[in-house]
Image (cartoon, rainbow, N blue to C red; front, side, top):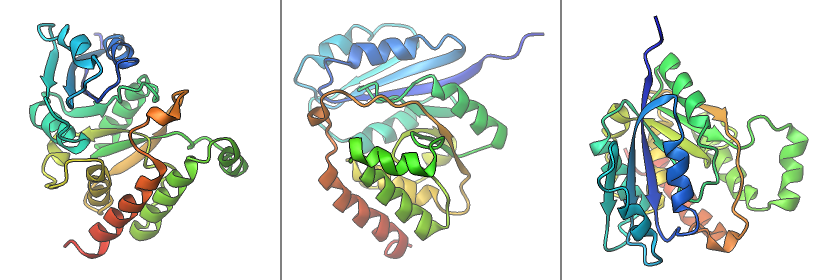
Length: 238
């Protein structure tokens, strides 16, 4: 008897990613080993991304939401959690930096251990020296180290990278009420997931940063509000 095909909901959030949005959708479609639904939420792109996304409006197993304004990454995740029909939701960023094939491993680990979330770590397999040396060529990793260190120190965890890709158990995470809708939502959500009642693990994921880093919507200076959000959720919100 053949094994039952695994099911997964995939969210592709998009904002002005005309160069990669088609590729990200194709990557999600190519996951043949999964019974999947693909949720695409565009936050008011003005570069033609919505025209590409619109082609999938009537396609089977696609759910398309095109907004006229940018309502934020956090709002996209919350909306996807509400409409997702499968047990787990994988976030596939439309810049294609994270290897979507890691979703197989993440789902396997999540189901085996009954997890509420799985983080895809870009550096989990790195030696200590490699983690240090990578800062010479990719100084942006400093932000990852700082944020991950803060979570580990404040919540007694041992993660290597909480900034990478992510997968959520829909039933668990949609119960977490967060008012924020933009990028700080992600840090508030992680703060909640660090609490002992939630089960979270990480797996290694391949990572290929985009060639033009200037097109990233999240900049290094965003570490300041991110740190604020982490500390606020730890000490000020009960």
